Length: 597
Image (cartoon, rainbow, N blue to C red; front, side, top):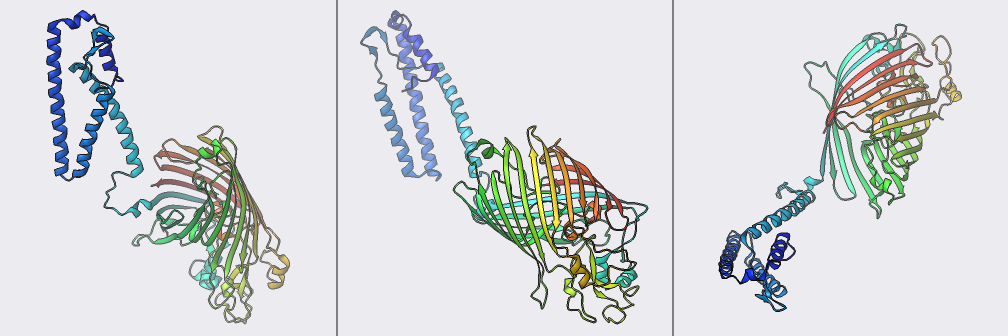
């Protein structure tokens, strides 16, 4: 029986019941009704036979089990019997003998009912199919192994035009990394490597391509690695400078790590342990660590989360930690407090127990202070072990390992091997004059206190105003010890001094979209930086501001604009000068075209 809940059927029954009873008594109409009932019975019989035939075909094709087919037929018969009991077909209504109950629905009414049911059912089925397809990942062949769904590929590419302009009054600067590599200033001079370029304007085309793989091994364990093109082979840059005709590009392993995350009952990570070569884990800026820096070692992060059920916390979607170029936002889980500790080997020294290490810790908070506006505060301590230079005795190479494997410029340096006229390991064939060194190292220890504050004002989102301040103070500089360990080096005509210059600060404002992902997204940057020569380790700062290193102050302005999905252009202009050293003014323009997968 057809349900009385269908609108067309209700209209039909209402029309019949409100018709004059004499209309039903007319013989011609009853004959027509009897013929229509017979036709409907033939249609129903045909529909029944068609359905049974389809079920038989499904069974023969192996699409439906024989027992399941029998069950379907029995259920259909049972359902039909129930409907007949609920709505018995009575020819007349005893309470109203002049009326009849119509047990037949004319074909045009039936067609209308069928169209309405099909339309309603199609919409519901379509919605359910879409939901199931999204949840169950339809379209992926079942033959593929399940672990493929747990792999995420990352890729990005950057083309850069970089122009460096130097002031006309600049002084020459020794390239101490080349001098250490070549074995003295004269040896470096003979290879045309004694000095850094401080006078000749330079235009370079550069490229970077990175390809990474992230694997979710279990709910708690994941791993990943990343490859990058480079011919710099420095810890703070993976640029490939063009102009190497006849040579192929070189590839380096930039990251390779394993990570464990323990989650609480709210599925929030409360413990994260990472080992290997990994991304910078700290809330920090480019004043302390270059955006391209990857660190090696182990990190341990404890987090405590609050306000799980607050609507603004539940609905907040944090941008990627490095979405603001040069500002690394660290843990991205408001409202929370966090404690991060890290142990990083910097240099393994053969035949020695005094390897170089970085022991670091950071405590901070991440809080939504008003709707989606967000405040992040962090205090850090970076303790570099065994990085300062120790002078060799005459003819000795015992402390050669104290020379840094990599440096840029700015930190105060002292000679490890020195030409005193009798030292066979540093002679006049390697240096220009007595008193010069053949191997240099850092004069200071580096025990750096660092404080970072970031406020993301989101009242006018998607446009954000991000204010950040970064302050660093090196507690490891000891002028008295340096003077005792290297007597006479800071006297005379070299223009060197042994003063404590150990503080740094950066103020920065970012305005615009928090991430550049679509066409017409935009952001703008303005920043001022002041970094004294021994405030931070010059090896790890970013490579563009003052051509890398410390002992510099100046401005940066820039912006980004979305050209298409995951495609954007970025420009930055830097104008910097030396603070204490010989005159060195550098202006740098960087134009980037970026894409990402």
